[in-house]
Length: 170
Image (cartoon, one colour):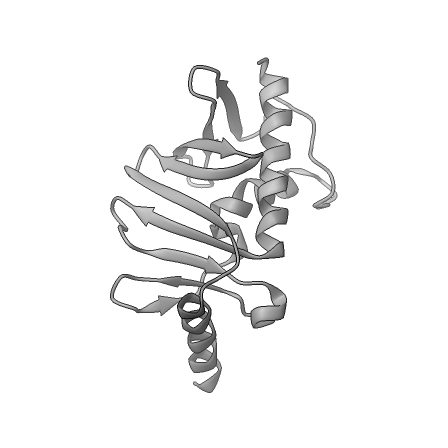
């Protein structure tokens, strides 16, 4: 793939993944330094606005933002690159953007190198299944995140709802 082709294809998968996250559960199970930590996004119908939480192996929960999910992070980046801030527009490829995207045809993964605000570079490898991100390797942290889309189980749903009930009770 040319850099332009990789950009367009990756951007489409990023949009697909984020849209899928809005239609049901996206569960991100992390292995590596944060082993066992799960990020959960419920639908609006399941939890209203407060549908995002991270759950540690010991059961502690914490707030996360939608752009902290690999399912939506890249889509959010594309939205911030668009000068109009439109989530409907994927900006055209430019070598000047703060992210390089390549496609590795030998294993079907996308490799990204994103220049962060502090000047550091974040290197991620995305595995795609059925046009959705399903595995993300954070090369720098040595962690792997498995993304699962679908309906939540009762335990995860309750943990997210309990977190937000406690948050608003304080």
